Length: 235
Length: 310
Image (cartoon, rainbow over all chains, first blue to last red; front, side, top):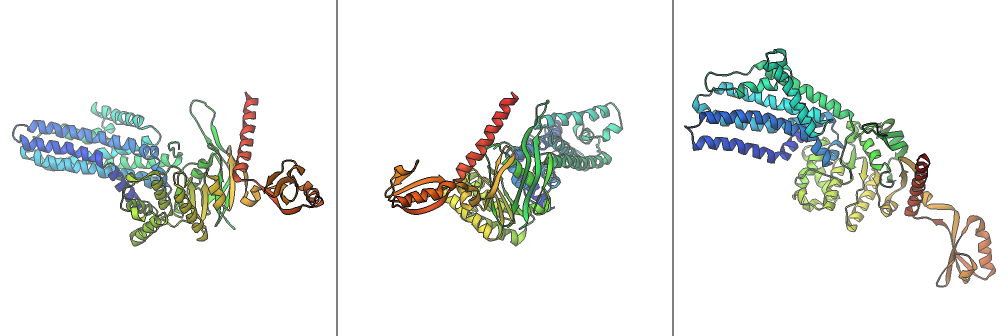
């Protein structure tokens, strides 16, 4: 597992600037609460909902560009010439994405606890919601990563949007089974629709389904990536 | 001697979309590299050198044929731990030099004190120890190339596969790399060296293979390849340079070449004129001459084929 953690740590380090700017966003939200603590609970909640949706988008961004970036720069050659398999490489990237998105979700959770908790927001639901949000981010990243093994980043992102959107649309129209298929919508829905009162809940089954499917997409990504030629930029 | 790298009738085609004809990079490519030698791998641009190297490393799969590296099939993960690889135009993550080498060593399973020692030894081998605290982003192209060599050496590999290792280096650094390769050979390592710098190859390689249009057109030891069998160069004294066609006068000496069949007759003519034969040597081509002869012949043949098809 050591090579996997090395690749994960390296990915997180490479993405330190995007992560820094994402955290600035959360910091701005916290400052909003400091400057005007009494006037804007509804505004603070709205920003929280927006951040929840954007964090899933960051999953798409990281997932679509990770392999391409390493291939375009030719840095992948030095990595894959070592004693690591392509499955380990993909797992390393995915773990790195989990780390970056986890840091973001954690900061978001702490800020929400402090900022929204004061207005009666249900903190127990919030932290399970954060776990669900992280799962949704990771699932999206895993799906996009598997698509980016054979599609250019933009197409991988569009395909992810389509694959996440179709079951979400069916679930929205009341189809129960569709809620469990790529359940990104189901995982973030309680956060996006959250109110101060009453308390809201994320279904644990969706979190479990999210993790199982994220692992399945990692295996799919590894399977495809191991069978295709490594396309690096011409010298 | 056992082969550490072996290609057996490998064909590699790059398929394209929309019904275009696939591009054949390697066509029945066979080659064997023996343990403990420095093997030069030469060919013009587009001959298939990098494709052959990437196949051995498992970066791509052959269309047909097979090969083995250190006794295992191409791309075998545990085997890659025993191999050092430097890609052409190497690109590395921008970190502190020692941290970067530790990262690549870690990917090969090294850790703890062993990794620290190996990383420092690798930096020392490429004369980058003094730069170990600097970030790779501040390095020149040549320094990055040396870092590339260090990451290839960090796991003390049995086989080094180097794709243009000296292309960005200044003359002093090239000499240092040459000495490094010779040291590697002394330690029993095998070096597979792809290079356009024929003079470098001529200085260090035990054997070379010349690749043209996806096939090996000549392989062998350098003395055998460079020696032509049908001509000799004769140096004589006290004979006029007009005596032999194409003869060149150099001070008191006259140099000329004749075919081996004419050698005896030419020497007797020198003696009959009271001249003295100073030396008789087989004519040696330079590697550059041989390279151009082999690769241009192939290119011309291909052009003729294409013209006929058209």
